[in-house]
Length: 181
View 1 (tube, helix red, strand yellow):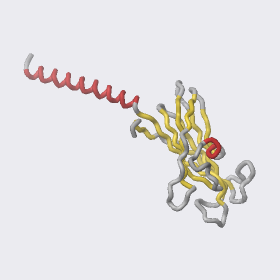
View 2 (spheres, rainbow, N blue to C red; view 1 turned 30 degrees about the horizontal axis):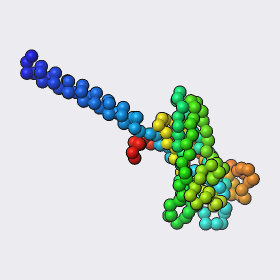
View 3 (tube, one colour; view 1 turned 90 degrees about the vertical axis):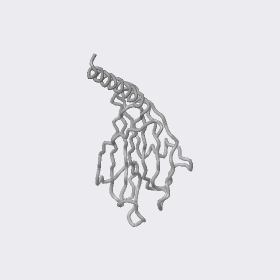
View 4 (cartoon, rainbow, N blue to C red; view 1 turned 90 degrees about the horizontal axis):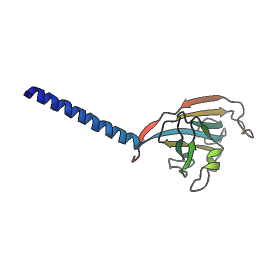
């Protein structure tokens, strides 16, 4: 073999070997990574005339989590409160809940479930208006949407919103993270 052919074989062999190594590293990283979804929620009544966080009104959020795959997915959910407390102080973080969604299944997290199902170190928030984030973690992709609704600024209606003024539906993008992040 000539020197040129030997060098070419060496370069090709090195590239194939490097490609195989990178492929192995990619597979290892893929097995070691997770998907995060962070959805903001706004819940409760912010009356007119008081020190307001947002415009006066009744706020509700519903976060839908769907497993679009053909395999069960284990997901972990955590709530972090932004308000309360006030004045730039960090809020409470709930204990993490774990659930399994079968293929094609969906579930919802809404304003009634946040204080009822998530356990907070100092107890559930007692404020009439609550703002925060729901973080969802899984090893596979999910479809996550948040529906935010704002009702009239009159007294809160028993069992729901009165006079819906605005509704927004947002697709929550995934954040790819490594397991050690």
